[in-house]
Length: 163
Image (cartoon, rainbow, N blue to C red; front, side):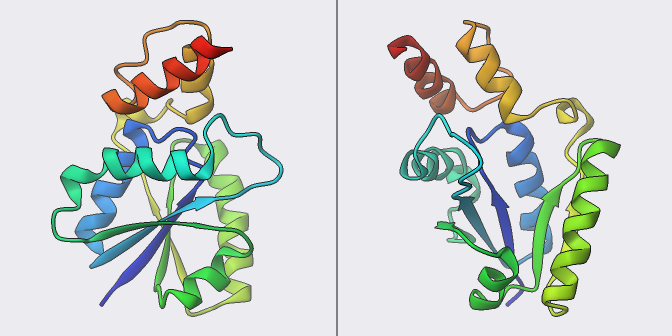
């Protein structure tokens, strides 16, 4: 079975993430979406909330159990080895993404040559989209309906109404 890891903070998951995931599902037998616990970031949603939102957002893709959702911390290559994954999926939107992602891919290859990084580009209509933009728009009362699934929009707007 060809297993891939799709790591990210996913705070929140966007249509750009989902587009990359749909492409990855055509290439791999099983995708493990891994919600990162990054101490350098202060997410709006807890890891459990992000996992729940992802579960809702990918339900249309996961009728056959092709996707699992977990959390992790530590080195992604060690996690990939533990999951017997062949690849780490990374989305590339722009050249600025490529420079950082190339460095990470080369370090990961040095740490575990059995795991390849696979770069997938989202549809061009999502190339400008990232979770930070979505959070900022939501915090300012902007319309985020074109950027995230309805459940994510609902929960994100509710988070900012409480503040």
